[in-house]
Length: 245
Image 1 (cartoon, rainbow, N blue to C red):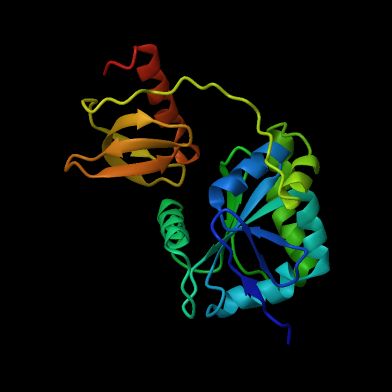
Image 2: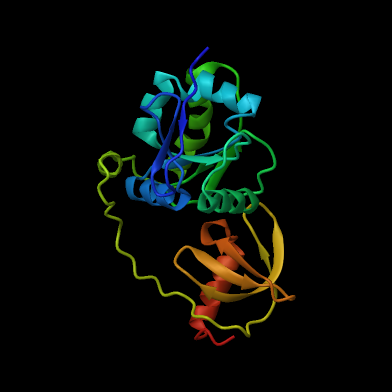
């Protein structure tokens, strides 16, 4: 039986599960930044690490194996979104994990999401029999054609090495023209990439999220990478119209 070690550090540091070579990021936004800066796909592991039997089997049979660790070191950023029962996470970490569970519509564990370097969902999967080699092939059936179809450059090691040494990431400089705050915009139906809908008006656009307000006044934060193409075009039309709607 493999010994199972889980170290949860503050939200802006990494967690390590199984063998030390596989780096798990508990801070989802930081994991997104690393993936984008290094052209890596983001593997997001929604797990119940200390009670979910299939989660534990996935770790023992795949994530703790040297072959998978070597593959991840070359190709992935690994995010760890945990929902344990026998220990308490920091409040900020629990809040983040609950929000991500709701945002991505996760209802069972283990749920493995594969996101592109720009944060778009490519695939979702879970436990698969066959061990590390079979699981790598399973992931590559999504990642390899997506990288080729979208002309995404090969992953680089420079930013990942800086991350492991604790060096601040040097991200590409961007000066996006964001939609300013306006509480009077009309209600419309927003549709996520997964097909979920929400009737709301957009209050403002921020760097990573949009702030929406429903008809009852309740507000919702939606990650921009989860928006449909129609939603993105709508925001751009508001910008072109001088953000006056």
